[in-house]
Image (cartoon, rainbow, N blue to C red; front, side, top):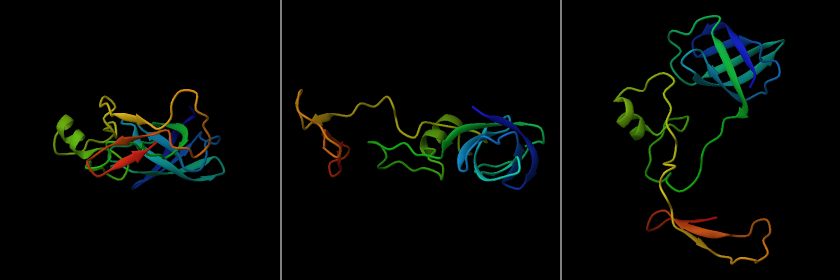
Length: 148
């Protein structure tokens, strides 16, 4: 995991050095609170980062860690009926954990990873598989059937 340091903060834009090997659109954790951001420009050793959370209190010299992967979302059964913010943080879960106000750097799993879903296999052991072949289904709600 590549890391650098904050050189300048200008509203939700942070400039950091030391992230030369990081890619454009890689997700970064900024500062002590590990605020989520994304590298939107690389120019002569300076990474320009769009931070997606409140940057109040960020200081020059704080660390920036690069995940070396682009922003992505977790998909699967359990999305329907859940309300998320713009970076797929489940608002109800976060409210239940910390109260009505989102805290800087607060995280929660997008999907309930403990919940079990019934999988109905379409194939049996030994059947040939190929790209695009449906392996089975998962019923999320009475009207939503996911094909796997």
